[in-house]
Length: 404
Ligand SMILES: Cc1ncc(COP(=O)(O)O)c(C=O)c1O
Image 1 (tube, rainbow, N blue to C red):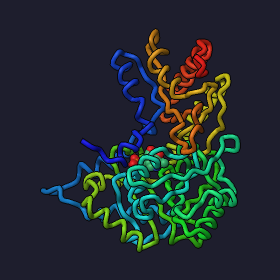
Image 2: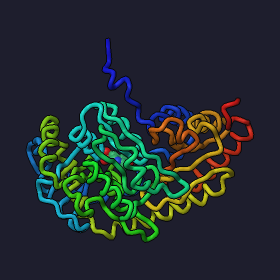
Image 3: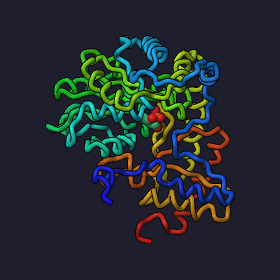
Image 4: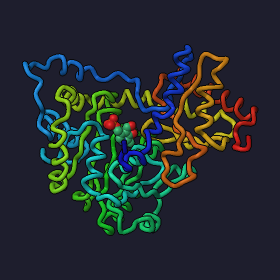
């Protein structure tokens, strides 16, 4: 039987690719510290569960394709606190930020079109694009200057007659970059000049450290009609399993087009929406506490990484990821070695994500990894120490270069 070329060409999620190795050693009793996936261990606010428990209906009906009114209203009110003023029908509820990204890509691009993305970028942009014949067109950013956006000329140079949009996550996954208003103004200028959409993936909006001021693309002037805000409860409220995201845009033509896709998939799970509506009412004090915790975790992991010989990384200012360059030729080989060989005579190891798949430019990121600081402080310390020990052994065994 034949499978579609689209899907045979599509990547498996690189974030999940090494999971079978981890499962194998875990079955043998090895503890694996997971720094590979952005699954926070912070408690989901209780309001979610209470709302689901109190749901009182004899039939679990389809919801409207755009989402339930309580959730759309809660989202609208949430955006007001960011000085972003959306009408009720500017917001569409989706099955996670993932569906929001895919639907937006499908609505603004035809097969063969491309979307400009600062790389390294959230690797699933590639997967979503591949599934509908849309290419990610990378513009490289560098750890050495904190992954700041390139200037206008460089952005313009990457755009061609098939470029339809710019996508960026802010704060960045995997970079942790919090883009400044000045950088976003340049992006807006480019978008206007080249008639592009701006797909602003802001699922980490609240996770900003060092007192930095956060600017949302939804606050930029003169581009309101070309900005699409992607949101999700997954990270913000530590509710990844709820599968609730959203699209918000003032471009009513676009919401109209996207609604066709929403109607085709009928609706997003009703009970998850009921719980999520409560999440968006969570008091801001919640974020203060959570951010303090992530800030501590960031510092702990960064300090541990700084003890590792030959490792290079910048301290990120947002989200909960760090990209680190290792003194190895192939970070994926090292990641697999940590899950197969390193732990043979130990009862613990650490798992992280090779960063090559966060780049679209061939050859970039081969010696880089992404670490998520989503574990408890003592576990992060332990994981950092294991990484150091592993890397030292790996280098001593002369495995760090492809020559072996
Ligand atoms: C930048 C970014 N966007 C979107 C998503 C998708 O999140 P979800 O589908 O869980 O809402 C993720 C998940 O890790 C992410 O990191």
